[in-house]
Length: 397
Ligand code: LMR
Image (cartoon, rainbow, N blue to C red):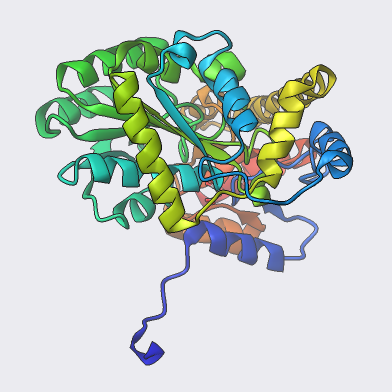
């Protein structure tokens, strides 16, 4: 039967991991996949994670199943971290959460929940958006439509067009995917005023936010990075959240994340909880525990939590320092618009105004690995590479 299958086109991001790894040039600058790299180009296990693993090795006394909603301690502590300690939503009864297999698992569970509740809904995603959003969300069968977000020419957010499209084209009951912080792939985040306008628009048009929050702590800091989410939680009657520990805890391969649904009433939140459990059971039965157990250990142990927060802040500052250096190196050489855009963007990513051909040239002639879309992950650079990187970008432009 398998002769009927077609070979799939390679996934742009997964493929770039392989292509960059194959280049052994000492000049190589790998700005491809969205993983954090330190000042020597390594992605080490975070200190608090290592310590939690040593403790957990002694403490874990069974590998028996936990349950379809995952690790309850993780769900509680990670919800407190995400929504804010003491946040009203935590005790309102309106919140249903489940641990997920990474942020992608959370996106899948959240989309399936939306489909169960309203199979006629359309999901709106930003242009551009994370390369896996449309395939992942679309594979549930729900229609996915784009709303304008970022203008690659002017390197600014197309906020008026975004609002006009959502206002005029989205139907009541549709869902709008919003990047909570560190927009992937552009790094261009909504300002606090823009979040307020979007919140009002969603309410006025009866649209539901689906917040994807995968980079908390890596933009402006943990609390600042949840501003948009927390505002929507306060204002909107319903919301779905997909969040992840891949980047901020460095738990990429452990597949640790959380899906949350906020309903109008505790009764409706119970319905969400039971449906998420059913979807999980049918899909992977139960989420993996190891990463969630480590996060729970870190968040419940004050010195581990303090160490994690301090390392996370070091990572954030390293990335914003690299951004400023790249912006300076580019503005000296006369590319002010690009320099200003890079300096003002947040988190790992920025979208360079290059064509796929120019991106290919950067790879083949300069050993600079970036996606064909022009997306760079600034964490892949090192201080001593910045001038060379700026020269290479300007040479292909
Ligand atoms: C990325 O955007 O590079 C990361 O989120 C990794 C992935 O799976 O795409």
